[in-house]
Length: 258
Image (cartoon, rainbow, N blue to C red; front, side, top):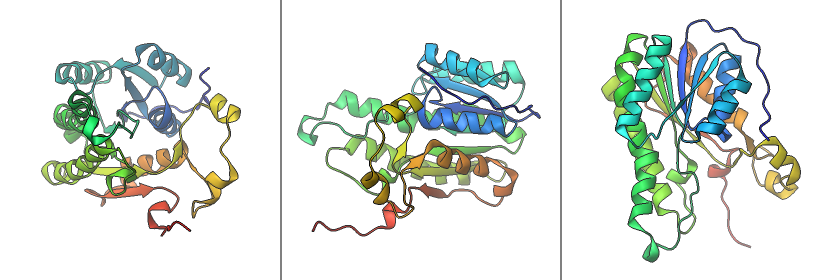
């Protein structure tokens, strides 16, 4: 069951493409941008769910299916956006193979490694490549969704950590290459409870989960969406090439086993 609010906002010309938007953080970003008046194109591999949530979000949402690791699909998808709306002002690269854990390094399958890198790192490059001419025309912005795992790791997370670390480097490289017309930044979420509302109600997080965060709680998709929306706005016009960590302070907390 998909539960969404229905923002009542009228578009005023700005068009954003958000990948991996059928659920979780991507969906939260899409809903937030719509509430601020954006026309949002949701993109995802899951055609059925993506089409459904776009309908639930209302007339300012539109869906296009896309595998971001496939250059032809990216090229065709971006062309569809331009054909439908005639412009593109923002790109949010959120699509990812999201499970950070793989099996042990000795057993890590090369095909899995390659797929994670293809989606999480090559995908944002391909999207930037094909969106850049249209973003440049409107002094647009790109936001890449990285992760605090680019700087910290648990065991058996090599593919995910490498992809997100590479994405941070790609972010500042793109900022230099595409500036000043296009700004490029990254947001690195920590623990974000991105489950559907029904799942959160069925299995609520514990007080320990929340209390371990210096901010006093686990993050929400709205925490990330608010940061992304600001980075896409004119208020962030002097900000590019940067990483913004949204993790409730966890990466600054010194932790030792007792």
